[in-house]
Length: 477
Image 1 (cartoon, helix red, strand yellow):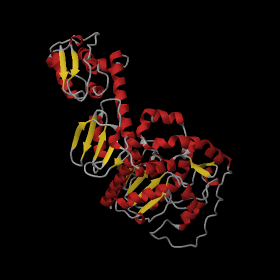
Image 2 (cartoon, helix red, strand yellow):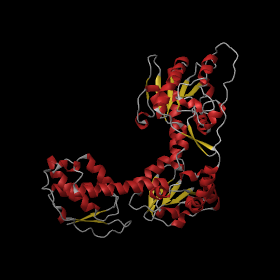
Image 3 (spheres, helix red, strand yellow):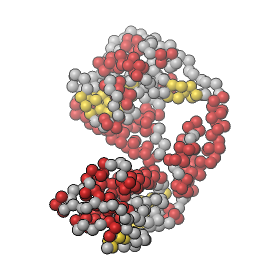
Image 4 (cartoon, one colour):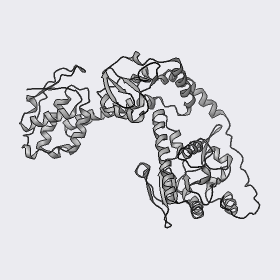
């Protein structure tokens, strides 16, 4: 018996035909699957022979949801035997419903490996597509990618969601993903020259990757594992790899040979006694914090970096610890992370003067590396020691919403270690005075993401979460 499918990736169509065959009691070895669609020339799929289940009556046919999710990925694999493999496992699953939970089953092992390969291919496509701007009529941006499997329809919604305001075409050898800002369509495949490079585009990418390259973190094996050579031909940044790797070792040697430069400790500034105002924390409290020796971090840091902002702030933000810029300036969030934080506040319609900004730890923890001071994550004893100051600030600042930026801030405020992904973007009760706690990432996390597209996605999500926090604070106020 020959079963002909119109599309090589339409799992729902295969599912309907497979269900009918299963109800009719057709064994796997009696079916040959083929694809009639012109978009892919697949050979006739030879029947896979093996032990099949006895089937089940139509009224009792129940297929686990996990198989449907698995099949939706496997159907996109290049293996021409994928339809037969799925049907053989389906006939066995109908007779043995617990088979889907057996990790040692040979058929299931093969299907899981195929699904994993498709998922990995989808990840590579979302990471390695590079758009080129074009002039003239039609889509403004074009790109070229060569996936291993038949994933174009599967991955298209990702690009539509990410670049909803752009008009673009992504060409592959098999398909063209077309988005005009309102309708998603698919066309015939193309060739690499459909997405030719331009001098301006190349120069921009070259300058960007030279600027972000860190020779001290060069790990060629890890780089090749994440970005295999087969993708290099279509990535503009790969032109830089050879020269940057060659120059990395001498640069690192120069860094290591340079003497460590650690700023001298600054004595706490003298303050004249003054009356407490709503514009800042009490001067006496700040002076006490500047003389803090509750943990060893005070020995190497330039100075204590206490919180800043009005006591009647609309929002209270808590980060991890001061960075290099903050340590030198004595003010929280004035470095690159602070600049991104300010952008998010501006986008949310919040002036920084309406916020109180502080950190879970008040001293900069770092490791000297040549002329640089590399950030080190504070440990539990250091966070616990500084909780005394954070409690003072929480009692002082009457903001209805406290925003924890990063896992360290969450632990400092709640005393619990939580996975950030499980609590991010959520508001929860905090304390006994009716205020709430909202969780997001630390802006420095976004700055450390090497993939431009991934960084942009996290940036947009961070901005949206700051806007949501501002909305909740205004409602509470």
